[in-house]
Image 1 (cartoon, rainbow, N blue to C red):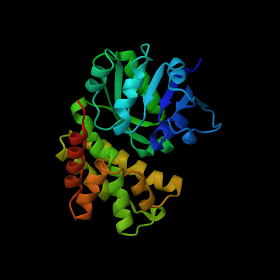
Image 2: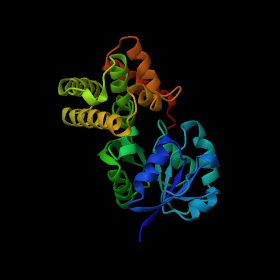
Image 3: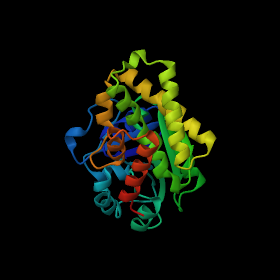
Length: 275
C-alpha cells in the first residue's frame, strides 16, 4: 500500500514534487487558489486543508515564505503527528517546532531540476523527527534527484549553490547567447569550477563542494534541454522577487563573481530567516 502524501501549495515546486512522487506515494494536493489545482494526472485534489491533512501521513509545506505563518496557524488544530517536510527558504525547523509544539519536521532545499527528477537537494532534520522520519523524507526526494544531508546552519549556503546556482548558469548562457544544445564540455567545466569555488568560499569541504557543483551544473543543462525552455525563461522562473536568487543576480549584473553572488544569496537567506 502506498504511503499517503499531502502537498500544500501547487506552485512550481509543489507541482513538480507532486508529479514526481506519484510512483511511490498516493498524492493529494491542496492550494488556496483552486484554479491552480490539477485535473487528473494521477493526483487527488482537496478543496479543504482539513481533508488533506486527515488523509495524509506526510505533509509537504510548499507555500511561499510570506504565507508560512498563516499556514502554520491553520495547521495547529489539524495535525495528528504527521511528518512535516518544509521547503520554505529561511524558515528553520526550530521556528516551525515552536509554533507547532513537538512537530516532527524535516527541512529540505530542492532546486528547480526537481521538474525532471534531477534535483540537487539539501536536507536536515529537526529536534523531534526520528531516523524513520528522515528516511521517509529521503525516500521522497531521492525519487526526485540527489540528496545531501547537511547541518541546518549550512542550509542557507546550499540554497546559494544548488538553489540559486542554476540561475548563475542560465544568466551566463543568456548573456553570452549560448545555445543549450551546443554547450561545450569546456563551458560546463568552467561552470563547475566557478560553482565549486563559490561553495568552498561558503565553507563547504572540497569533496562536497565539487559534488554540488557537478550535480548543479549537470541538472541545470539537462533542465534546459528536456524542457526546451530558453536560459532567460528558466532564469526568470527560478528568480522570486526579493529572494535569494534575485540578490545573487544583482551581483552578476554588476559584473561580480559567482562567489560574490553566492555570498549575496546566502546573506539574503539569512535576512529572510525565521529562527
